[in-house]
Image: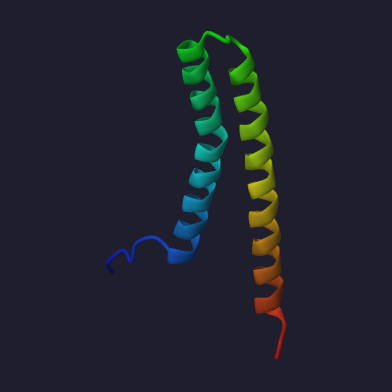
Length: 78
């Protein structure tokens, strides 16, 4: 038997989790870069950490609530 490959639904979940990771890291990197550019060390890095953590946490809550709603709606009989 040939391997069918990854399930598209699971692959979508993995891509969303990767996006959440990038949303958490990108503001930190931007803050570090702007700190070195402007010489405001460490204030923009701290802002980037707080912004990245809050946006990532918010996105994780949205994704998990969406997954719970879609899982429960699919399991109910018509």
